[in-house]
Image (cartoon, rainbow, N blue to C red; front, side):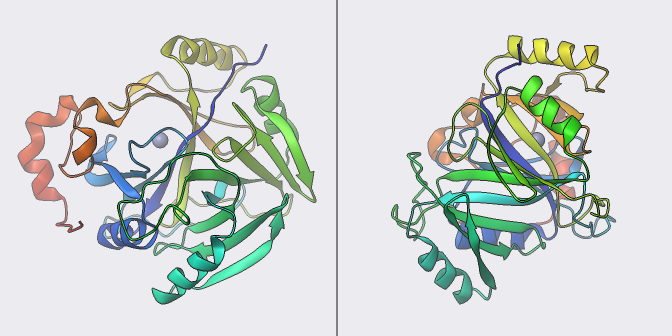
Amino acid sequence: MPHQLLGLHHVTATAGDAQADLDFCLETLGLRLVKKTVNFDNHGVYHFYYGTERGAPGTIWTTFPYKGRGVRVGQKGAGQVIATAFSVPAGALDFWQARLADTGVATRRDTARFGDDVLRFDDPSGLWFELIAADDSRAPWTGRDVSAAHAIRGLHSVTLSVRALDATHDLMTGVLGFTVTAEAGNRTRFTAGGPGPGHVVDILEDPAAEPAVNGLGTVHHVALAIGSPEEQVALREDLLARGIAVTEIRDRSYFQSIYFRVPGGVLFEVATVQPGFTVDEDLATLGQALKLPSWEEHLRPSIEAGLEPIVYR
Ligand code: ZN
């Protein structure tokens, strides 16, 4: 019996400039900053979590802004999430195309993907973003000047590139509880925990793709959601039994995580739904204060001194 993943939890990228990242995600995309913290594996760098009101699993985009800290520019390719798609209401793409043009962001209408219209653009770090017009009942965040008729509902899907699909396909369907729900050309659509946006992983099989290089402007990993710590332990033991190198369970304050690479080379995380982003601040003020993991709180003065100043509203 495969384990039952619930769909996407979050997507995490290595970004460039912290201020440009905030400006783009908050002012242009209209997302909510649901947590301002540091990279738990390198507290010299911010970790921004963006989402809808409470940062529910499946709505979260996160960045490590590494500009000026000796990290090379990455290269998209095989073994990586190459594009991240957000879901917007049907008919909203004209609004977004005009809004992005107003801020100098070039966009391109892609051919419809499995019946849904797609708008492509790059974020300030060169990450490939898409907006996909889809049926999506999730409540948007409308705290900015983007109305509910247009606002982002959360993640729609990620697109992975692999050189050979077979072994990754078998792990997705045989262990992680995904089902193949569509195929077109070299794109195979896997869904888990439901059929719609927030539950979708698309995999492109491209034998000629150059290997990805991790670095600025590339996605670091995709996290899938799992319902309970007990299920996470069971999945971890199963992965180990199958010879897949998986990390110990790591405390990320807002969820517990394990990490492993799928056969196609992409780094996956499996994160628990609980406790969520309200564990250390109120819903109304999420993202306002710099939050640190409890075990680094005693280092706060030096950590704050090492982070670049940022402004946002
Ligand atoms: Zn993560």
